[in-house]
Image (cartoon, rainbow, N blue to C red; front, side, top):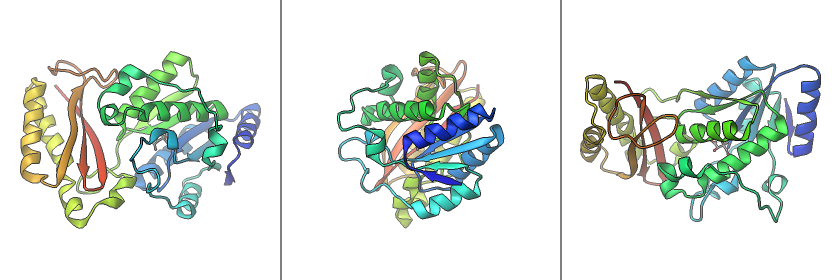
Amino acid sequence: MQTLANPQELAGQCRNWHTQGQSIALVPTMGCYHAGHEALMRYGRTVATRLVVSLFVNPAQFGPGEDLDAYPRDEARDEAVAEACGADVLFMPQPGDIYMPDHAAWVDVPDMAAGLCGKSRPTHFRGVCTVVLKLLLLTLADVAVFGEKDWQQQAIIRRMARDLGVQTRIESRPVVRDPDGLALSSRNVYLTVEERAQAPEIRRALRCAQEMASRGEKNAAILQQAVLRRWAEHLSLGRLDYLAVVRPDTLVPLSAIDGPALMACAVQLGRSRLIDNILLHT
Ligand code: PAF
């Protein structure tokens, strides 16, 4: 595995591979790897002949007062994990390699970025889209792989790619969870023992809503109330950021479940802001 920091070296390597007729999978990450990242990398390995993993804690997607400086980092371990998962290149640029001091161009999908996580993180998805498009332009990847824990993120990236005519196929992969149902996240390391004990309630309540929907409950407000009631009882340390029912592709809010629907939430648990989602079947 090569470790590169220079964007032009990455672009040159990817051009060479394309010239040789090879295909490239890109897995963009912010590091501090857990089994969820490993699943994305191992999948990427199977869908192209070359695997590029990027590791960049992207300052542009953190708002003022968010955890940019405290974001968990473990680059030595991450390099070993990426190599074990079959990466050909681990791209680890510095912020100055990606953003010029007078950087002024942004990519945004404002309608889809305004709701859900965008309500409390208004510039987050603009930062995500901008860095992801840069990575896609540098690698000209055939396929890019994202996790479904960040459902809103992958939906926005799909729309960005569609609307801008990006040729990379955007794929998403299922959430990887601890045995008790907690979605794996680099931010889980912030949880205290007490918070960690309550955290699986996020998923359990969403599962209850899914069950109610599969038994015929179509009213989104009733499903949301059931989740909130359960959290009031079992997730006393949590503070709700949002709970919403939306169309999975457009993220438009739904009041009735009469087709594909996604329930998504964010809960602040101590220092960790945890997100999760579940598809509701009718
Ligand atoms: O999901 C993430 O880790 C980041 O948002 C991404 C896609 C790597 C962009 O910085």
